Amino acid sequence: MINKVVIISAPSGAGKTTLVQYILEKFPQMEFSISATSRKPRPNEMEGKDYYFITQEEFKKRIENNEFVEWEEVYPGCFYGTLRSELERIWNKGKIVLFDVDVKGGINLKRIFKDNALSVFISPPNIEVLAERLKKRGTETEESLKTRIEKAVYEMTFQTQFDEVVINDDLKQAQYKITEIINNWLMQNK
Ligand code: ADP
Ligand code: 5GP
Image (tube, rainbow, N blue to C red; front, side, top):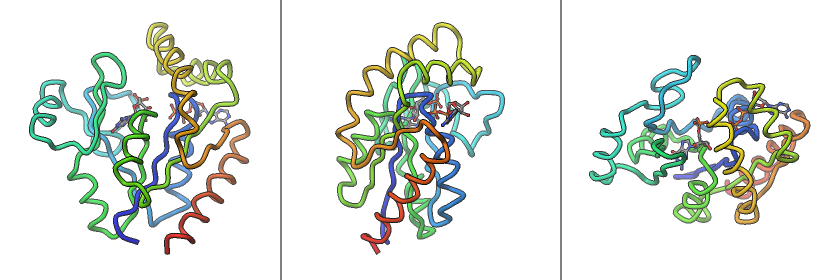
């Protein structure tokens, strides 16, 4: 297995982080790709574990230096991207890179890594459930909730561009489905 990647994308609130945590427990041969972001850390987030938190100025400097494999201004003023050094860090350990990126980023990464990538779209059962989950998570303001929901409606239209789609309605079933998809892919890419 050389330079393989698994890409998990979904509208915000669909359950990507929850499923990514599960995959990391289930598949020790995978390691999470820690993105760089100019967004402020949430109270439970740790530098160098969830993200590399950098200023917008630093982010732009790194874009200039061509340090990113891909980057996006996911929300106005909030930049997110994968550093080339992060991929090397993981591949050097002989591990598979696991990405948690937005939908556009997921499509871009699949274009870059082609057959070396498995791309999975996590879909919420519907937009109402997505909005409910985001509200319950308690991380969003009224304004950022609105932005995320509007973006989610648009992002749902891109799911056919992914290798696989998993509907995250019942969490246990979604976990089972994603395990099956990854196991099949690992078997085919031995
Ligand atoms: P994302 O990373 O896609 O933004 P999260 O994994 O943070 O989404 O999930 C959003 C919220 O929904 C979290 O509070 C999470 O605990 C909850 N959640 C995730 N999957 C389910 C599910 N199948 N049923 C109910 N709640 C869920
Ligand atoms: P959050 O602010 O909720 O942590 O992330 C917002 C969105 O940015 C999520 O959809 C997340 O997957 C995405 N994201 C995180 N890292 C990257 C990255 O490196 N590139 C891209 N394109 N999106 C990312």
